[in-house]
Amino acid sequence: MKSIASAPAKIILFGEHFVVHGTRAILAAIDKRVTVTTTFTDNNTIKVNSELGTLEVPISSSYEEAKSEFKPFVFLANKMINSNQNVSGLEITIDSDIPIGVGLGSSSACCVAATASIFGLFKEWSSEEILKISIEAEKTIFPDTSGADCTVCTYGGMIEYPSIEKIGNTFDLNLLIANSMIPHNTKNSVKKVNKFKESDEERFSQLCNLENKLIDEVIVAMKNNDSTTFGLKMSDNQNYLEEIQISNDTLRDMISSLNEISLGSKITGAGDGGCVIALVKDENMDKVPALLPKDKECFSAKIDTKGVVWKIEK
Image 1 (tube, rainbow, N blue to C red):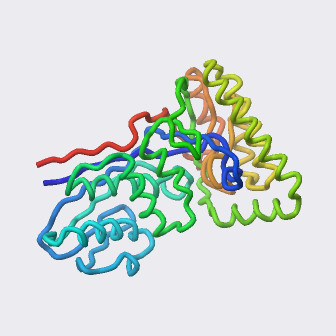
Image 2: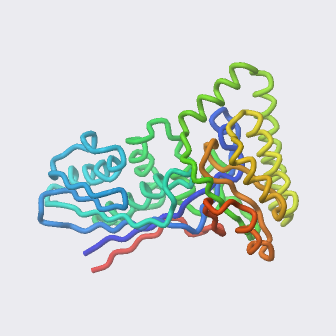
């Protein structure tokens, strides 16, 4: 018997960094997925297979002893093995088409899919239960995680965080995601934002208020099927991110190029690397490769509305 689950990647459309300081944010699941397959074994081990390597440890091993990238999977295996004494081993295999380390939520999607897959071997779980446990798993590598990424990977669609309610009346977004090929460092970006806040608390507070107002306008634009305003608000949000100094010349050049054929573009996620996103009309998608340097990866994306899905195969 095998338990198979998959969960989508995510992007932050609006509100990154500011959300940590009390504003709202809009996140969306996109149609890139990670799939996790779990089976029982008789080897008295926990085995994890992934593109980052393979781990095989005794069934009694604690997740705290594992390398960082394997901790969530061993944590989840520990949790189920400890409550089901007749388990003599688990093999967990991760297959992903989500780029790693560029702000598209690969770790969160892995935690959500792994929770559904591993726990699904034992019984059915609700989405709410999967979310709660997947956040616990993610905290083994990111102790300060807000849970926002796991939330949108679990439920799919678009959410206005900190609510977990899906945003209704959203229109069909044609998104272009371009990878700068510069690994992002969330901790460094957060430090830069905190430094900006400490140096000018008044301006930072103004930017937080502007971000909340912008999100109100985005919600209205979606209800009105107004992609032009949606794109303009992406560019406005980028201006705020520039001001808190989490951009760089590479990202600025990519955004400037994409603005030639898009309704708006911006950084998504931590900044200082990672990806930029643009709202691009269908007829302009084929113009994108000529605008970006050849060493940058790009792909089109749609909103994933399914969230986590799982099944048992006998």
